[in-house]
Image (cartoon, rainbow over all chains, first blue to last red; front, side, top):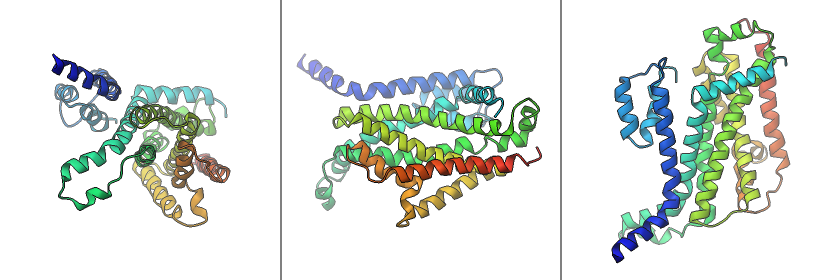
Length: 74
Length: 255
């Protein structure tokens, strides 16, 4: 039990540092997915489902790669 | 400047529809978060990696709050200048190339309004991104190091924004003079290099956008910034001159 308390204490210490990053990651993910599945959106290099996987599974860099390189009129 | 309000609304809508506003703000935010974190933990990471084998370990000083401000200014001036060039490079050139500029100017709007609305929209985008970055950088600096004077930090962000608007306006001038976004970006980069070189010169150097970081840093740390009015006035004048030159060229161009 002291171990769990210690871990919770550590989590509480780093939470103020991690929380804004989590919000940013979530915002990027949502924006990228909304943009990707617009009907008029054309993408480059790989298909839309592959971009969706990249956006979902590559934290922060995935959505950024999509915004900078994936959109045809970017 | 007839039709300015309408054109500005159209430009701002374009910034949001293309997600440019959000993406630039989020990337600025990431740099803002990384800066104080790097200042705080990089010396510890180097020490942990080097162990006792690196004789330089003794030279690594304990991070202080000024390091966080330095990192923030360094990252945001470098990436911010790049973002300003990317945002402004196609503003006019792409619309001329696609023929949409000619179409819009058949409506009852002036060419001056067309130009100014575009630059104001880019400046607004950079302002939102700088505010987001400033808030996050302040928060992380507060958590990791302690508090900074809020007024000074806001003044630092304002100076940072002004320097980014200068890069954007010079690239915007390039974009107006040419018909290609790449050429506009090239002109922006040339101006960036030139102002970078001039900023190293003794007398005129302090009036360049790169050098605004010196008073910005002092203000953020609660120190007095000597001779702020001159450099600010010169940078505002550069923006106005770029807009004027762009208008003088654009009003005679055949679209």
